[in-house]
Image (cartoon, rainbow, N blue to C red; front, top):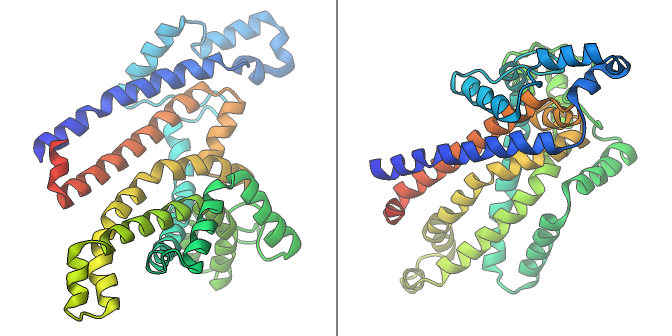
Amino acid sequence: MIKFLAKKFFGLFPTLIGVSILSFVLIRLAPGDPVMLMLGERGADPVVYEQMKKNLGLDKPLFIQYAIFIKNISMGDLGKSIVSRRTVKEEFFDRFPATFELGFVALLIAIIFGIPLGIIAAIKKNGPIDLMVMGVSLAGYSMPIFWWGLILILIFSVTLGITPVAGRLSIMYDIDPITGLMLIDTWLSGEGLEAFIDAVKHLMLPAIAMGTIPLAIIARMTRSAMLEVLSEDYMRTAKAKGISPKKIIYVHGLRNALIPVVTVIGLMFGSIMTGAILTETIFSWPGIGKWMVSAVAARDYPVIQSGILIIAFMIIMINMLVDLVYAVINPKMRGQ
């Protein structure tokens, strides 16, 4: 097990270095000058322009800028935003709770609905219910998030007026950010149940939009895993012994079928972060995704470079945790 963990851990560094190089180079290949964007009309003054460029360290050759970036990262310094002049670390942790809350609820919706739908589809294999569940799953997986989010807004916000269009909470509520998680903070604030319900309404549409694709994947994976388990000899033996069908499916079958499903759920963290970029932009959700989009628009190099590196690190660590859990469940994985 120690050898397995060491191999996974040391494989982390080449990946992070590759991500840092790609993010550093690609953002500089994109058109646009951060100094010109900051100065606006004053950018016409060459003296002011060169002085600002020097202050930001953008006058140095690219390889020196990258070396400084790596040196600072190794010392825990993620840099300062060119736009806000706040540290990237502060800005990231200010916005992370919003993205975490949205991603957690989206994944929870996907699990709560995806696993039962997959089980039902497997039990009713090739029947109308199976075809309907798989058809809906395929449609959910195929729908672009930006299109699906706009459709949800059009139906539930514009037409029916049930949910708000954007944000995390109505302006009538003044909530102190105790944890940064609005569902918890509204509950602890003393504003009453109304504030909590308002936070739920704001969270509902973006969570559904983000959770649709993971829901479809979980449903299809659960169905495939259940069909494979139901065809095993020990399942037929249990049936021959007269064990009730519910016990065969939910005790003997589901327990083994969930192993690959749990692995897929853990690996979905990356897709959740990707979905956050589109979802938060559509619903004006003040999280990491919207923050990164704004940074790209402003050519805020430190935010983009360090933000991508942090997200990559989190995804890699989640994947390592999934591998560890899977290695505990399945010892054959330890040699890989």
